Image 1 (cartoon, rainbow, N blue to C red):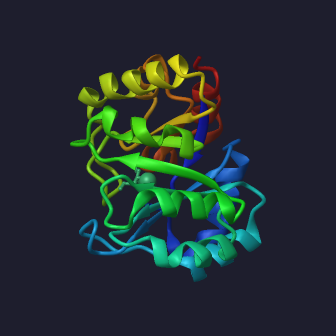
Image 2: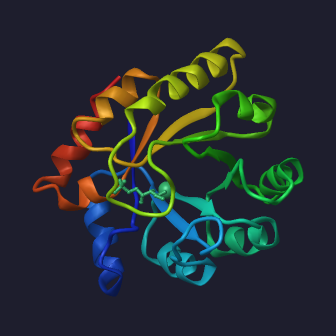
Amino acid sequence: MKVAPSILTCDFAHLAEEIKKMEMSGADMLHLDVMDGVFVPNLSFGPPVIEKIRAVTELPLDVHLMMEQPAPLLDAFAAAGADSLNLHLECASPLKPALEKIRALGRRSALTLKPGTPAEAVFPYLELIDMVLVMTVEPGFGGQQFMADMLPKAAALRAEIDRRRLPVVLQVDGGINRCTAPLAAKAGADIAVAGSALLTDPDPRDFVDSLHALG
Ligand code: DX5
Ligand code: ZN
């Protein structure tokens, strides 16, 4: 399984150093949580900060847009250096044109499902996306507890992706640690987003290695 550290619980006053630590841990990409204070009850950062992050790392930037209206900002996120743009299925922007635009911008497109959204809701969009993200916590905050009842949803998505032989990558996000990552891998997740557990681990390199070793 690949590992995408979330910078949400980083020390933002020393972001470049925090990102270096993530690189040293062997992370495969960075997961950047954008929050608008409307779609979720929290605010984080936007394109100007992503542009600065782009300048200090070669890691791919996977941008998780927890926004009610992401469509008007897709150009700005692409210009800032995002490699993949991940919309919530529950957002208010029309999904099909937004996903087509992301691909037209030369970026990877993705859809995210909140815990209350069933797997089947994303089935009509699977041809339009490169990744699907199953939230294993309610979006908005790092450091929450993994919702094990999301595992059947991840498994259902894995089965549908495989049945249709689509090249869609399956991600999980929220509450991933050394104990919950193996459960997500067993359900068929290809990428684990890890925030607080990785940041507080005494041996981040070993944390990432142990997730890499999962099938
Ligand atoms: C939650 C974010 C997650 C979060 C993960 O809204 O989407 O990416 O940062 O953090 P942990 O791993 O601490 O649950
Ligand atoms: Zn996220």
